[in-house]
Picture 1 (cartoon, rainbow, N blue to C red):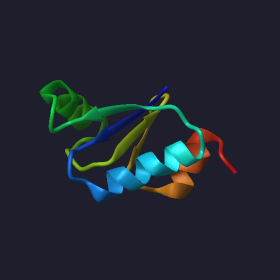
Picture 2 (cartoon, rainbow, N blue to C red):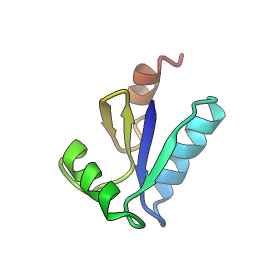
Picture 3 (cartoon, rainbow, N blue to C red):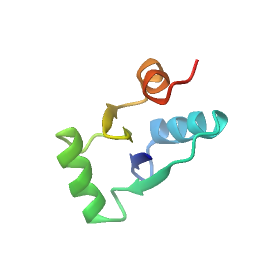
Length: 76
C-alpha cells in the first residue's frame, strides 16, 4: 500500500502524485491540512510535518526523492 501525506498548496506534493500516476502506482492521499488525524500520523511516521511524505508498505520517504521512490516501488 502506498500512502502520500500532502498539504493543499504543496508544489512538490503535486510532482510526487504526478510521478506516481505516470508510473501507474495506486496511492491513497492523506491531506494533513484537511484532517488533524493525518497530520498526527505524518508527524509520527516522519518525525515532522514537512511534506510530501510517502509511506510505501512501511518504508517512509520524506520529500520528492525519485531514486528512493523508484527503489521502494521497484520501478526501473
